[in-house]
Figure 1 (cartoon, each protein chain N blue to C red):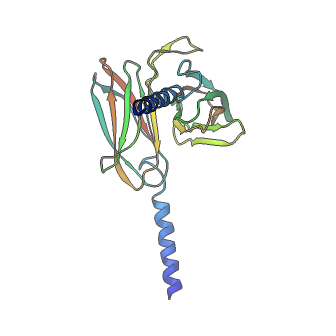
Figure 2: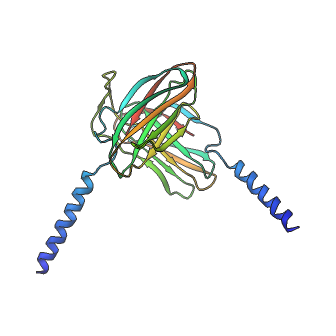
Figure 3: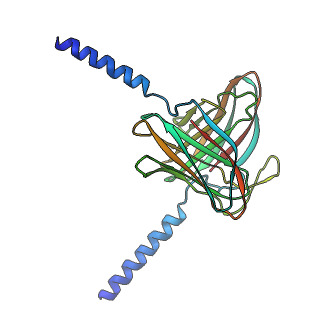
Length: 127
Length: 134
Protein backbone atom coordinates (compact mmCIF):
# COMPACT_ATOMS: atom_id res chain seq x y z
CA UNK A 1 0.00 0.00 0.00
CA UNK A 2 2.88 2.32 0.91
CA UNK A 3 4.56 1.44 -2.38
CA UNK A 4 1.37 2.31 -4.25
CA UNK A 5 1.24 5.70 -2.51
CA UNK A 6 4.83 6.47 -3.45
CA UNK A 7 4.19 5.43 -7.04
CA UNK A 8 1.14 7.71 -7.21
CA UNK A 9 3.19 10.59 -5.79
CA UNK A 10 5.95 9.96 -8.34
CA UNK A 11 3.46 9.93 -11.22
CA UNK A 12 1.88 13.15 -9.94
CA UNK A 13 5.28 14.86 -9.80
CA UNK A 14 6.15 13.63 -13.30
CA UNK A 15 2.83 14.96 -14.64
CA UNK A 16 3.48 18.31 -12.94
CA UNK A 17 6.95 18.56 -14.50
CA UNK A 18 5.59 17.68 -17.94
CA UNK A 19 2.84 20.28 -17.59
CA UNK A 20 5.28 23.05 -16.62
CA UNK A 21 7.37 22.14 -19.68
CA UNK A 22 4.36 22.39 -21.98
CA UNK A 23 3.27 25.85 -20.83
CA UNK A 24 6.42 27.55 -22.10
CA UNK A 25 7.09 31.29 -22.35
CA UNK A 26 7.09 33.89 -25.09
CA UNK A 27 5.25 34.20 -28.39
CA UNK A 28 2.64 31.49 -28.86
CA UNK A 29 3.93 30.44 -32.28
CA UNK A 30 7.45 30.03 -30.95
CA UNK A 31 10.54 32.07 -31.62
CA UNK A 32 10.43 31.64 -35.42
CA UNK A 33 9.82 34.68 -37.64
CA UNK A 34 10.16 37.09 -34.79
CA UNK A 35 13.23 38.97 -35.88
CA UNK A 36 12.12 41.70 -38.26
CA UNK A 37 13.62 44.61 -40.10
CA UNK A 38 11.12 47.25 -41.12
CA UNK A 39 10.87 50.90 -41.99
CA UNK A 40 9.14 53.12 -39.48
CA UNK A 41 7.61 55.89 -41.57
CA UNK A 42 8.36 59.54 -40.91
CA UNK A 43 5.64 61.40 -39.05
CA UNK A 44 4.47 63.16 -35.94
CA UNK A 45 4.10 60.50 -34.75
CA UNK A 46 5.25 57.93 -37.29
CA UNK A 47 4.08 54.57 -36.05
CA UNK A 48 3.58 50.96 -36.87
CA UNK A 49 1.66 48.26 -35.01
CA UNK A 50 2.25 44.54 -34.83
CA UNK A 51 -0.12 41.96 -33.41
CA UNK A 52 1.36 38.98 -31.64
CA UNK A 53 0.00 36.20 -29.47
CA UNK A 54 1.90 35.45 -26.26
CA UNK A 55 1.73 32.50 -23.93
CA UNK A 56 0.80 33.38 -20.36
CA UNK A 57 2.84 33.09 -17.23
CA UNK A 58 6.33 33.71 -18.44
CA UNK A 59 8.65 36.37 -19.75
CA UNK A 60 7.73 38.28 -22.90
CA UNK A 61 10.23 40.72 -24.37
CA UNK A 62 10.40 43.17 -27.28
CA UNK A 63 13.71 44.75 -28.29
CA UNK A 64 14.07 47.58 -30.78
CA UNK A 65 17.22 48.96 -32.41
CA UNK A 66 16.98 52.06 -34.61
CA UNK A 67 19.23 53.04 -37.50
CA UNK A 68 20.79 56.02 -35.66
CA UNK A 69 20.38 58.15 -38.78
CA UNK A 70 19.66 60.48 -37.06
CA UNK A 71 19.53 59.35 -33.44
CA UNK A 72 15.98 59.77 -32.24
CA UNK A 73 13.63 58.57 -29.56
CA UNK A 74 11.89 55.28 -30.31
CA UNK A 75 8.89 54.29 -28.23
CA UNK A 76 7.41 50.87 -27.64
CA UNK A 77 3.93 50.45 -26.20
CA UNK A 78 2.25 47.11 -25.63
CA UNK A 79 -1.52 46.80 -25.25
CA UNK A 80 -3.51 43.72 -24.31
CA UNK A 81 -6.69 42.58 -26.09
CA UNK A 82 -8.77 44.93 -23.88
CA UNK A 83 -6.58 47.85 -24.96
CA UNK A 84 -4.90 48.21 -21.56
CA UNK A 85 -1.34 49.49 -21.70
CA UNK A 86 0.73 46.68 -20.18
CA UNK A 87 4.29 47.80 -20.93
CA UNK A 88 6.07 50.76 -22.43
CA UNK A 89 9.47 52.27 -23.03
CA UNK A 90 9.24 56.02 -23.43
CA UNK A 91 12.04 56.57 -25.85
CA UNK A 92 15.31 58.11 -24.69
CA UNK A 93 17.58 57.01 -27.49
CA UNK A 94 17.55 54.74 -30.51
CA UNK A 95 17.28 51.62 -28.35
CA UNK A 96 14.12 50.45 -26.63
CA UNK A 97 13.02 47.43 -24.65
CA UNK A 98 9.92 46.23 -22.86
CA UNK A 99 9.57 43.16 -20.69
CA UNK A 100 6.32 41.94 -19.20
CA UNK A 101 4.67 38.78 -17.94
CA UNK A 102 1.28 38.05 -19.56
CA UNK A 103 -1.09 36.66 -16.93
CA UNK A 104 -2.64 34.27 -19.48
CA UNK A 105 -2.47 33.42 -23.17
CA UNK A 106 -3.59 36.38 -25.23
CA UNK A 107 -3.19 38.69 -28.20
CA UNK A 108 -1.13 41.80 -27.72
CA UNK A 109 -0.65 44.85 -29.90
CA UNK A 110 2.90 46.17 -30.07
CA UNK A 111 3.03 49.80 -31.13
CA UNK A 112 6.35 51.23 -32.32
CA UNK A 113 6.46 55.00 -32.71
CA UNK A 114 8.73 57.97 -33.08
CA UNK A 115 8.35 61.67 -33.74
CA UNK A 116 10.58 62.56 -36.65
CA UNK A 117 10.67 63.95 -40.16
CA UNK A 118 13.02 61.09 -41.14
CA UNK A 119 12.09 57.44 -41.55
CA UNK A 120 13.86 54.91 -39.36
CA UNK A 121 15.04 51.46 -40.46
CA UNK A 122 14.38 49.46 -37.33
CA UNK A 123 15.46 46.05 -36.15
CA UNK A 124 12.87 44.39 -33.93
CA UNK A 125 13.09 41.25 -31.85
CA UNK A 126 10.15 39.57 -30.16
CA UNK A 127 11.13 36.83 -27.76
CA UNK B 1 9.34 76.26 14.51
CA UNK B 2 8.26 72.65 14.08
CA UNK B 3 6.39 73.59 10.92
CA UNK B 4 9.50 75.28 9.52
CA UNK B 5 11.60 72.18 10.18
CA UNK B 6 8.91 70.04 8.57
CA UNK B 7 8.76 72.32 5.53
CA UNK B 8 12.55 72.38 5.11
CA UNK B 9 12.67 68.58 5.46
CA UNK B 10 9.94 68.16 2.86
CA UNK B 11 11.76 70.52 0.47
CA UNK B 12 15.05 68.63 1.00
CA UNK B 13 13.27 65.35 0.33
CA UNK B 14 11.71 66.71 -2.85
CA UNK B 15 15.10 68.01 -4.11
CA UNK B 16 16.72 64.69 -3.26
CA UNK B 17 13.98 62.79 -5.11
CA UNK B 18 14.46 65.03 -8.14
CA UNK B 19 18.21 64.48 -8.08
CA UNK B 20 18.01 60.69 -7.97
CA UNK B 21 15.54 60.36 -10.83
CA UNK B 22 16.60 58.79 -14.11
CA UNK B 23 18.46 55.61 -14.84
CA UNK B 24 22.05 55.80 -16.01
CA UNK B 25 24.19 58.80 -15.22
CA UNK B 26 24.37 59.51 -18.94
CA UNK B 27 20.99 59.37 -20.77
CA UNK B 28 22.05 56.49 -22.99
CA UNK B 29 25.34 54.68 -22.90
CA UNK B 30 26.01 52.70 -26.06
CA UNK B 31 29.10 50.80 -27.11
CA UNK B 32 29.33 49.29 -30.58
CA UNK B 33 31.27 46.38 -32.07
CA UNK B 34 32.80 45.13 -28.86
CA UNK B 35 34.79 41.96 -29.54
CA UNK B 36 33.72 38.86 -27.60
CA UNK B 37 36.02 35.83 -27.74
CA UNK B 38 34.66 32.29 -28.04
CA UNK B 39 33.35 31.08 -24.67
CA UNK B 40 34.68 34.34 -23.23
CA UNK B 41 33.04 37.22 -21.43
CA UNK B 42 33.13 40.99 -21.20
CA UNK B 43 32.34 42.97 -18.09
CA UNK B 44 31.15 46.57 -17.79
CA UNK B 45 30.62 48.70 -14.72
CA UNK B 46 27.82 51.18 -15.30
CA UNK B 47 26.48 53.68 -12.82
CA UNK B 48 22.68 53.51 -12.48
CA UNK B 49 20.66 55.96 -10.47
CA UNK B 50 18.17 54.40 -8.08
CA UNK B 51 14.42 53.94 -8.00
CA UNK B 52 13.69 54.22 -11.69
CA UNK B 53 13.66 52.02 -14.73
CA UNK B 54 17.04 50.71 -15.87
CA UNK B 55 17.53 48.78 -19.09
CA UNK B 56 20.44 47.06 -20.80
CA UNK B 57 20.30 45.61 -24.29
CA UNK B 58 22.81 43.46 -26.13
CA UNK B 59 22.77 42.96 -29.90
CA UNK B 60 25.41 40.44 -30.99
CA UNK B 61 26.44 39.86 -34.60
CA UNK B 62 24.77 36.46 -34.79
CA UNK B 63 27.75 34.14 -34.61
CA UNK B 64 27.07 32.73 -31.15
CA UNK B 65 24.43 32.86 -28.47
CA UNK B 66 25.19 35.12 -25.54
CA UNK B 67 23.94 35.54 -22.00
CA UNK B 68 23.40 38.92 -20.37
CA UNK B 69 23.63 39.22 -16.59
CA UNK B 70 23.38 42.21 -14.25
CA UNK B 71 24.88 42.16 -10.76
CA UNK B 72 24.40 44.73 -8.03
CA UNK B 73 27.37 45.92 -5.88
CA UNK B 74 26.71 43.08 -3.41
CA UNK B 75 27.12 40.51 -6.18
CA UNK B 76 23.45 39.57 -6.47
CA UNK B 77 22.19 38.80 -9.96
CA UNK B 78 19.35 41.31 -10.30
CA UNK B 79 18.41 40.62 -13.93
CA UNK B 80 19.40 38.20 -16.65
CA UNK B 81 18.46 37.11 -20.13
CA UNK B 82 19.96 34.01 -21.65
CA UNK B 83 16.90 32.63 -23.39
CA UNK B 84 17.52 31.72 -27.01
CA UNK B 85 15.83 29.48 -29.54
CA UNK B 86 17.64 26.29 -30.42
CA UNK B 87 17.57 26.85 -34.17
CA UNK B 88 18.11 29.70 -36.63
CA UNK B 89 15.33 32.17 -37.33
CA UNK B 90 14.33 33.18 -40.83
CA UNK B 91 13.18 36.73 -41.38
CA UNK B 92 9.84 36.71 -43.22
CA UNK B 93 10.46 39.99 -45.04
CA UNK B 94 14.05 39.71 -46.17
CA UNK B 95 14.39 35.89 -46.18
CA UNK B 96 17.65 36.30 -44.31
CA UNK B 97 18.61 33.87 -41.60
CA UNK B 98 19.22 35.11 -38.07
CA UNK B 99 20.08 33.67 -34.76
CA UNK B 100 17.97 35.24 -32.07
CA UNK B 101 20.91 36.01 -29.86
CA UNK B 102 19.70 39.48 -28.96
CA UNK B 103 18.89 39.94 -25.32
CA UNK B 104 17.79 42.61 -22.93
CA UNK B 105 16.85 43.19 -19.33
CA UNK B 106 14.83 45.74 -17.39
CA UNK B 107 15.03 46.23 -13.65
CA UNK B 108 14.60 48.88 -10.96
CA UNK B 109 17.77 49.51 -8.91
CA UNK B 110 17.05 49.97 -5.21
CA UNK B 111 19.51 52.84 -4.96
CA UNK B 112 22.13 54.69 -6.92
CA UNK B 113 25.00 52.28 -7.52
CA UNK B 114 27.45 50.84 -9.98
CA UNK B 115 26.12 47.61 -11.45
CA UNK B 116 28.25 45.04 -13.21
CA UNK B 117 27.04 43.94 -16.62
CA UNK B 118 28.38 40.59 -17.83
CA UNK B 119 28.06 39.50 -21.45
CA UNK B 120 29.04 35.87 -21.78
CA UNK B 121 29.60 34.00 -25.03
CA UNK B 122 27.98 30.58 -25.18
CA UNK B 123 29.50 29.64 -28.52
CA UNK B 124 32.76 28.47 -30.01
CA UNK B 125 32.95 31.35 -32.52
CA UNK B 126 34.31 34.79 -31.77
CA UNK B 127 31.62 37.44 -31.91
CA UNK B 128 31.05 41.18 -31.67
CA UNK B 129 28.15 42.96 -30.04
CA UNK B 130 26.57 46.32 -29.39
CA UNK B 131 25.66 47.13 -25.81
CA UNK B 132 23.22 49.86 -24.83
CA UNK B 133 22.24 50.97 -21.34
CA UNK B 134 19.61 53.51 -20.43
